[in-house]
Image 1 (cartoon, rainbow, N blue to C red):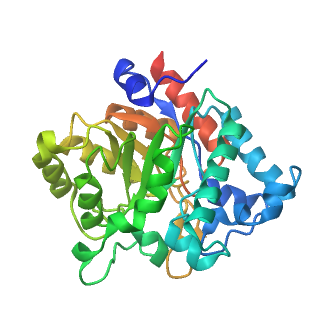
Image 2 (cartoon, rainbow, N blue to C red):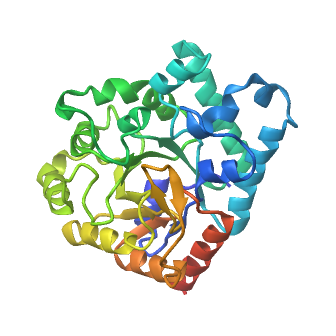
Image 3 (cartoon, one colour):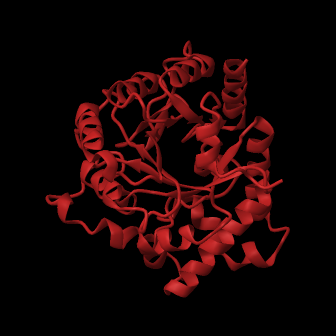
Amino acid sequence: MPRQPIKEYLEENPKKVLVLDGGQGTELENRGIHVANPVWSTIPFISESFWSNASSKDREIVKGMFQDFLDAGADILMTITYQTSFKSVTENTPIKTLKEYNELLERIVSFSRSCIGDEKYLIGCIGPWGAHVCAEFNGDYGGHPENIDYYAYFKPQLDNFFQNKDLDLIGFETVPNFHELKAILSWDDTILSKPFYIGLSVHENGVLRDGTTMNEIGYYIKSLGSKINPNFLLLGINCVSFSDSPDILESIHKELPDMPLIAYPNSGEIYDTVKKIWLPNHYSDITWNDVVNRYIKAGARIIGGCCRTMPDDIEQVSAAVKKSHK
């Protein structure tokens, strides 16, 4: 049975919430893939043996991860392409030409679709401009972020994803800078021709990583009025503090009460950006059920997990979503 277009599904089922998968990169790392590389979780796909050997270890690990997220209740899953911009790939792998790059993306998307089947939704995942300079968690895009050509940076990946019928939705993830957000929102449906969402990278105190407040973001989006791209389906947060995420999402909902939202926080462990280690969760009394209920009340339509969230976490998300549907 063909999938209903995701925009149509969300519009026709205003009370339904889709369950997203979890932290793919950290989950692959847990399962034995060495992802400490400039292209992060894309690394297994770079090796030709991944494609030539149907029973290669890495291939089985990736397939197993997708299957475990499906078994946990995921309705919508992501391609493993967060750190797969043309710039990142061509600077850090043997792939150097646009033709080779397009072949890589097509292989990844096709493989992802084969892993999840035809009934589930598939997101084409795109990391922010800051991902290639490790700035997605501080929003520091240099002295003149307004002068960066964001479209030139994203164009090769966007061009490929927009023509791929296996993808239902484009996800701009972990966006930490207001100028980048404004650039994405300035592109009309001739540039962003598929449904898309934007996930913001937000401090625990509820401001964008570059210091922009949710009030400023809300005001800007409202100021666009009818000029906003009709393919802009959801705004939200990802890779943020588990315990603070409900407050952050509620602050977005307060500014944009009619905007459908998306939320997929980290596991609750805190990442120390200086020591580059994960610190224990000090908020163990907060459950996924608590968090999901608050998300839904704030207008979330897609809920899942980001770094360090595992199939067990997504199973808890799915259970909480099912309760809310009763």
